[in-house]
Length: 160
Figure 1 (cartoon, helix red, strand yellow):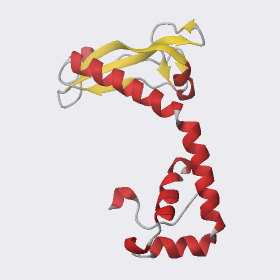
Figure 2 (cartoon, rainbow, N blue to C red; figure 1 turned 180 degrees about the vertical axis):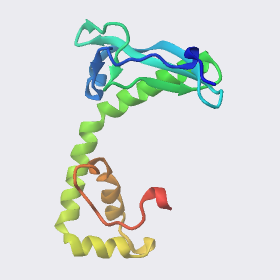
Figure 3 (tube, rainbow, N blue to C red; figure 1 turned 90 degrees about the vertical axis):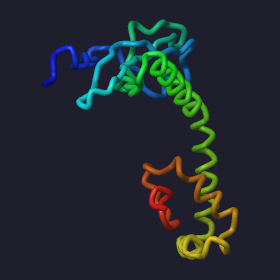
């Protein structure tokens, strides 16, 4: 049976920032908000984001796009470390995103220069016969997935 104490609080009314704001945060931090247990009795911890955005302090803990950070861990100390490292990893990833997108667009241009037939031939060759440049370019366009760009390059990494 679920009791009221095991239900996480609502964060819908909290101020929101968007993921693109993360690299602009000064002194980013995670703010512990709640500890509870899931339906299997495992502990979870909820965090929001704090810091200064463009020189202005964020009020209370902010959500990122309306989402909170949920960490499954055995102890609060472990959860604190995981939440902080996750926020830092997200900021680092966001900071390099523009460069990765520019690299991906350049790789897409190189792949387009061989045409669809050339890409399909390269994608279906045995791995030993595929050029390193094609492999690098196919991997480099991954940041563009979701922007209506499709490249046939064999099995997806999660299917191997």
